[in-house]
Image (tube, rainbow, N blue to C red):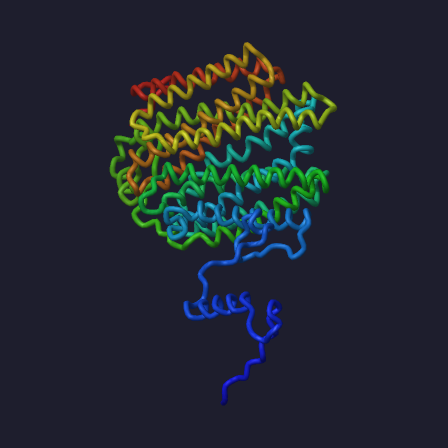
Amino acid sequence: MGPVARSDPAPDPDTGRAGWSAGQRRRGRDRDTRRREGPDDTREEPPPTRRLTGQDDDDPGPRKITVTRVAAWRTRNLTRAGVRAFHRAASADGADRSGLTALTYAWMANYASDATLAVALANTLFFSAASAESKDKVALYLLITVAPFALIAPVIGPLLDRIQRGRRWALAISTAGQGALAVVLALFMDTWALYPAALGILVLSKSFGVLKAAVTPRVLPPGITLVTTNSRLTVFGLVASGVFGALAAGVSYLFGSPGAAWLTAGICGVGVWLCLRIPRWVEVTEGEMETVLIPRPRSGAEPGRRDRPESRHPKARMSGHVVTALWANGTIRALTGFLTLFAAFVVKAETEGTPGRQLLLLGVVGAAAGAGGFLGNALGARRRFDRPDVLLVTALCAALAATVTAAILVGLVTAAVVGLVGATASALLKVCLDAVVQRDMPEAARASAFGRSETILQLTWVFGGALGVLLPPTWWIGFTVISVVIAIGTVQTVLISRGRSLLPRRSA
């Protein structure tokens, strides 16, 4: 093929003669230089719109620049960045390989369903009991509140603790049961079927918590302690509770309480899938030991009959530090359970007929408690707990000082302070309990120890909640009674740490 003929250059505008102008020759030289040196590594300056928004090259942004399109585009990008950051946080430190990430997502689904259920019941079961004058309605509400914990502690808790296989399926079945009952709740919200459906959901939710406590030690990433793991799970759960609680509030505003119940059912459906994504190695329980809080007394007449079952099923007794931490945590859980229900009853009684103001005032106490939960977990994750007994007693004394102050200076402000202090102490003492269990209990007994301790903490929470239901809706009366309870619990914690007790002991 012959050379390509070039067209004659245009006449020079300066001289009028044919030939290349100076500008044409300069551009030609620059073009030849670029061809010899290769492609230019520098990129063209992005358009002003992309430079101002900081958008990457994967999404060039809207072709036509308008305020609405740019806002939607920016929101989409921020959402993607948030999802990526959330996934990195949930998968950090090898959590995705150990199975902790899968458990985190399932636990968040459980927190989210609890939050949406609370919204669904807010204008039905909850406030109807708060404003009811008849004792039978109050007693019925108390039954709905207490029964899940009362069943968990002596029956379901030990039963789940003995499950050696199928704990993933047990978690999934518990979540599926909650979803099915949420459907019943949505369809029969205005009938008496509301009560057994709510009862069943609460029982299954607490069962999920016991199973989660037993599964957690099996998904620990290398180099991460149980303290860090449980703090991480709690923080993720609180975030899920806040996000989906707000979403449920919007759904309830648009579609009523049944809408929030349907949302609960949908979350539970996703939760079943998340539970089954937990890795199979959580089922391996070979060599595990069962823990006991108080050993059964042995009969001297039948020593052989007592010893043989124990040799086949070895048990580990909780250490003195663990028992001390349980007493402290149980005392502070009684405070948080009390405040959760008592504050709602008092606010309802003082603001009758103004539901908007009721939600606002309860939101103040709830926000203070939520901030306390985050603060307590943040403080606990940075402590070494070399002297746990000192921390336990100090936290209880701080809570006692807050409740005494609230009994003297009555009002919503001091109640919010109690919520902040109580939630901070509760989160901090729970982290301390986790640290003590990890330090004092053998590895084979930790799963059982967490399952048993969780049932005790739930039962003490409902004890405080029962006080909040039964006491008159008056600030100073309620805080005076709960101050006495905390004082007794504090004294018992101090005595237990010194090998003594206010309660009579059984001989081992």
